[in-house]
Length: 336
Image (tube, rainbow, N blue to C red; front, side, top):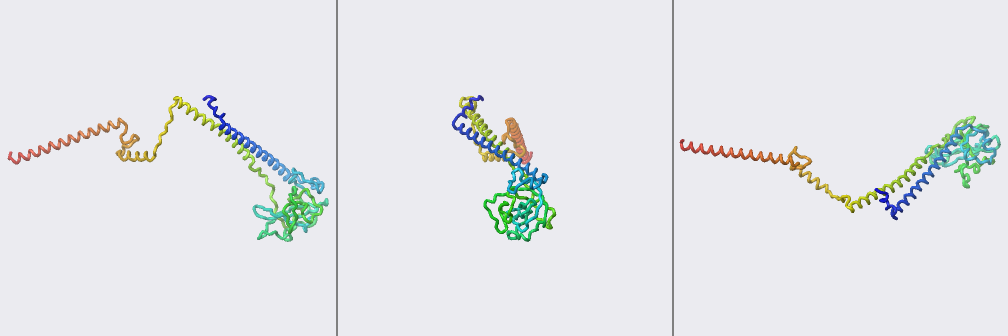
């Protein structure tokens, strides 16, 4: 067909369809790009987590030379080492911290470092009590007494939003609100890896950070496919309408036979087939019905005529035999 047969897409109806499809495809493109950016950001985050978490431990003073120095985002999960003494009397619990689906608390203990500052150290995790209450701090496994060398990971403080400690618990890990810390490192807190000397009883260790990339890549391809499908759907619909218009024009011009439709009743067809099978002798039913093709009908007619002729001959012979018997009986009666 000539390209001129697609002139109908210049109608207002089709221009609206095309405009909506283009807008939807562009929106899918933006969403795909957004998901791809999120994937790239997550990949970069995973890369620096792996580099920091499994890297060589550096002295705390080299990473945070001052107590109020902020921990850069790229140094989150930076592995460090330092020495100091735990202030077990200032132990506090961080609430709403689950592990493997079980509710519990982080156990935070300030460490007075050799440089004089106090570092908030999350030593491990404990579950909630039988009724969901916080465990008794004095009954928790105690940290090593005296000077201890620790290795762990530095974390960025959490936003406390004006929170204050209550009943030996806090909700957010912000060294600025931890009670008992007079000279805290405000720019970071620590997650413990190991202690030397080791404690007599250990708390449950925290799991490593998640490095799951998420579903951003699959979502990116999904939005791309959606955009292609939208544009492809408009092209397909335009082609179908062009074919329909061309066929209608050919019928009106007499160049093509008009399409006629016959309504078929399935029940009537089924009933007709049942009657055909009932009237056809066993073994003779065929796709031609009870009558069969013309040649088969002629052969059956000839056979029927032959049978009728044979039956007439037999009947005549029977009648002739009966007359002869009657004549013999009459002659016997007369004495002949």
